[in-house]
Length: 112
Length: 116
Image (cartoon, rainbow over all chains, first blue to last red; front, side, top):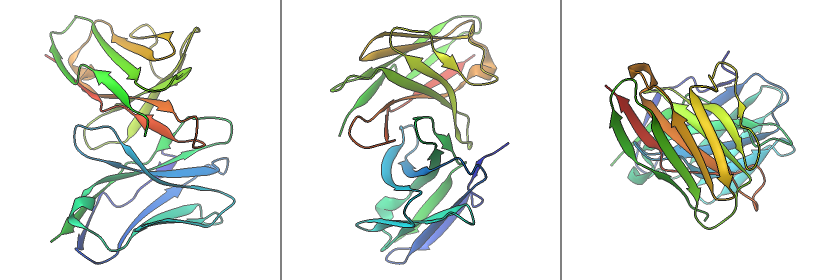
């Protein structure tokens, strides 16, 4: 039972354009969501997070949107840069626990 | 930011042998650490929660006798894959929670295990 899903395994975007990565979850107990970026043979690095009390969080070129009613979140990268090319994982957790449930990842390729 | 290291970064072993992977928090103390496993093109799956001074908590389906976890100090957790078999070949990643940013974890660089 995949509680966190990223339905697009890959995405290609032209440099300078917007990248939109999507994530859906099924467990209504999740109240904290994070996006991590991962390069091959490396551990994930934290990008941005959002609490369920918000519907948007912005940090530089990265913005995460949360739609609780749809159990959907998305990561927007504007403008996309070639260095953004990596696998992006969304993760969800519940209050009082550090346990993450990860999505399956989306491989983003930003074309120069 | 905080740094979590893992050693070794990659290991190749024969079937039936045991392999120990170390996870260290380099500039902060971690009473809890997490061990994940990632198969090719799949998600990171939480295997267990390592607790300093007490037994690890294993996720459903993870054999605790096969994946031995020891959290001997506030900066070190070890995962031992006992009697490794080719199906244990995977990418093992540890993490430690941030004490500053709520719910954030710092991940190690991972260990690639290949069992022949």
